[in-house]
Image (cartoon, rainbow, N blue to C red):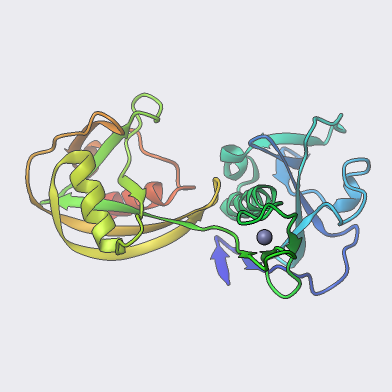
Length: 280
Ligand SMILES: [Zn+2]
């Protein structure tokens, strides 16, 4: 069970009760989620509000219960004409528009499952069409019995501290002026701690010590699990790789550059550091 803000999301692959019009429908199109707007507040529409877009549950994936609502998801292949009270909202704008960070994570889960579903329609070993496994969230190949579970790609993200400062870096994919923590995918054969050490050494050229687990968060765009750590500077001068990272520096809590929103674990950790520093 995961608690998102004040709401509770219980992931599940099978519904406890039959699909009906009161179920929530998470409908994705490109990198947007279909949301209902009422009194300038955005929320997830119910199935019965989506006449012509949803006809039955056959083309939908069940992803669990959010705040007591059964949740189904589906990806549209083409644009539909929408009633006035429905709008496609950018995934990264869901928290802003709804005021509920849990809905952003819920939409991410829908994105993850739909991505996995569409990528595994055929067996990677023999090319046969796969089937949904009945007793768990998985695909099974009826020809060679290959089973494919949803892929989750582990990644580490680390807040490195040196005296009272935090290391922040600008990735070449970021918009101008935005700085964040060092992150990267875990490689086969590597522990999480080794991943932290390697990523920091590769991207900014310094060694760290006292690596401590901090927190984790699914980042389902399309299938990462971010595991956050803190670490202390040990040695070396900052030397960016000029490949992923094009600038990095030590920042004090009262002089931070633009940082990610609280939708991301990086945004949460950097604010935690800022708030801790303010208490000292
Ligand atoms: Zn097969």
